Image (cartoon, rainbow, N blue to C red; front, side, top):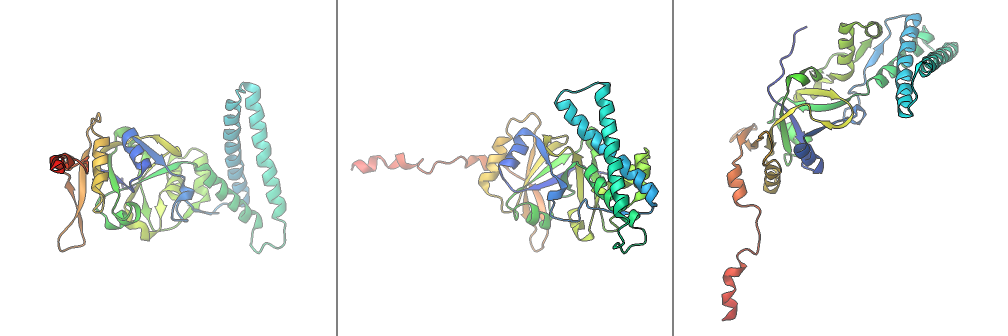
Length: 313
């Protein structure tokens, strides 16, 4: 497999809001729940049942036991239960839950209304697919390769009124930033899931890629990379390097952002997007912050005192 080189900068298009300001001044990022994405097929692979029912039972049992163990362990930690008895209880309960579900599936597979060759394999495949998706409870921080894409500004940058945040990727975070591939199949092989559960690193990579890093071909204009992490707001593992303002971004927003980052320990560079004369292309130009700060903040009545003497005549 050919390794894809990460760009020196990755960009996050944003509308300007209190959350964007928080991202800038507190240096945090928001890892989104994939179920909130605007593409309903994103992170929704389909399991290809290339294994028989017996093998699928083993996969499903392991997935359920792992999930149940994780849930019960978290609950035990919360209420401060620990020790060998607690561990044994969790293990027994996890096995029991898996065995009960498998018994239910075997019973349901006897229903004559199923119009498939192997109802047990079909049902097990559906349950394995559901469990696999539940296993991937990570959040996603989406980034793009370029700051001058007109469609990205329109779709994610508040119709060019917003900002685009440019990040570099420190070495410690490089393994968590992955490139999206576009097109192809949404299938995940059950055999790869089985190998992943047995510790096969290559199989784990294939399953990870199929679940988290595939999108339909029409989305290719985004040139997306994804930072994977715990869901919700987290301290940024990336290094903020640039803020790029859209062509319609208000001057007051530019001033507010420049002032908000004034005195930051690591300087941030400021740019603005300009039209290229005679074409549909956009270009990134340095922002003259000195000129920007000459006129702001302004006071509308600042010249009123000049005319005070005239009122006495």
